[in-house]
Length: 168
Image (cartoon, rainbow, N blue to C red; front, side, top):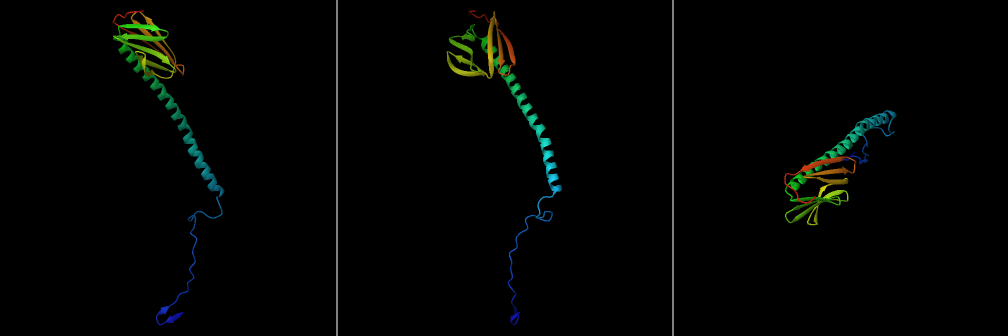
């Protein structure tokens, strides 16, 4: 088609093309059996590798909890040793450890599932958590502390003092 000298008119048959959804390897007929088997195999491999790691994570968490409880016991026992060795008077009354240091009265007692420390019947310092029972036994210049946690593990420690305690 020639309109004028040197100018051409082109037909305007522009069609909007729909973009291909999936390139090359996919067709519009759906998944084949081979593709489904490959997907299932990939899922099984991932599940096979994932399940044991979950049990390892769980056992590590329990192991860390046990180690934390043992460290808490060590810290508690060392703190109690320091405190008992400077006290002038130590008694066990109604399942509570009562220590007198100068004009202060320090009490270790079970409170719920915790062992707490109170000074002059005030305060609430948690010394040990998750305990089922605790017993204090005075034997001369020594105190024996026996504790059982909520999982059934038992802890026992003795503290000896070279200072003569009053009472008991």
